[in-house]
Image 1: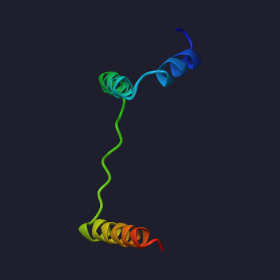
Image 2 (image 1 turned 180 degrees about the vertical axis):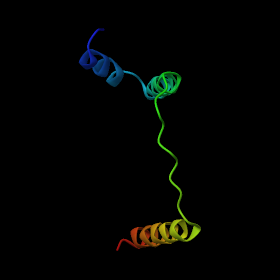
Image 3 (image 1 turned 120 degrees about the vertical axis):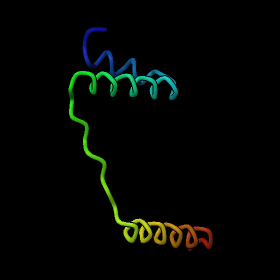
Image 4 (image 1 turned 60 degrees about the vertical axis):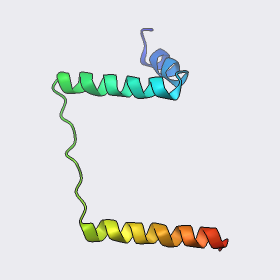
Length: 66
């Protein structure tokens, strides 16, 4: 394999657990090469609570068939 297209096609053929191993391998190589990783995003407790409440309401509507 010498082209990105060949590598992408080979990666598509992998089972999910090997795809996960591949992504971890690539991330480690990026870090070792000095690549900057994005900073983690931070959300307030209120924002997350709102998302959870919205998700719960959506699930309740789904269960009722609405």
